[in-house]
Length: 289
Image 1 (spheres, rainbow, N blue to C red):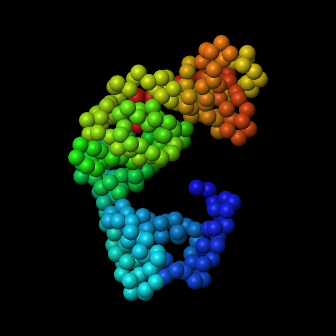
Image 2: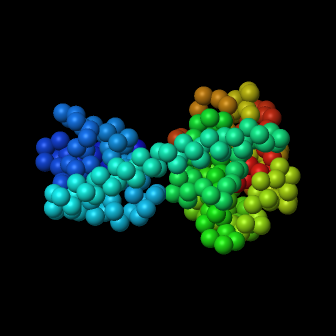
């Protein structure tokens, strides 16, 4: 979430309070971090991970109790417990990341996306591990663990130009629950569906080209689209990763004669364009998760 508008105002006021007269819980949490003045980076990289660690490893109610605590001894005891949970979270994260990287490196499949699973992995940490895999390989990454008998839960992280939520919506017949946004999502599947989502060639191949030809390359730029009659014929597609210097999101358009065309829209100016020429990079259908 960008720090603009009222978000920036709230963050500014919050930092003023933290640096002058912090709540007891925040004060107890920051006790080991002996700085004269705290910044937004301290909240992002010191406070937030510790608050999140309570829910990832034990229960989020611990963090809530700390934040609303009005008794010094209680606050310090909770802050110490949360610090220990954060240390444990780091250890689990490191171990899981090593195991996940090992799975990827030992795989014989050279895919454009990553799907890994271990029944013993911690549900609260899979999202962090997915982010680590994206950092290392720059590929959409899905990390599964066993959540209950017969079901797997995963966190997914994406890369620029690849909308996870739209992709999961296309695959929803294989997914029991999902939610999130274009770059981060969570999902639950039946265990038997894992192989379907892992496979480079699978039953997902009947989906439209919009979900299998996800990345497009436009080497010669764009021409502005002045009217429906000027549209050129292109292969159907609805997701692009633009290789030029401006941010373009492709849309599938329909001509007056109901034939489907490909055009792209500049998200800032809202103007429509057609590619002068393009090539597409076909992803394996496992990229759909």
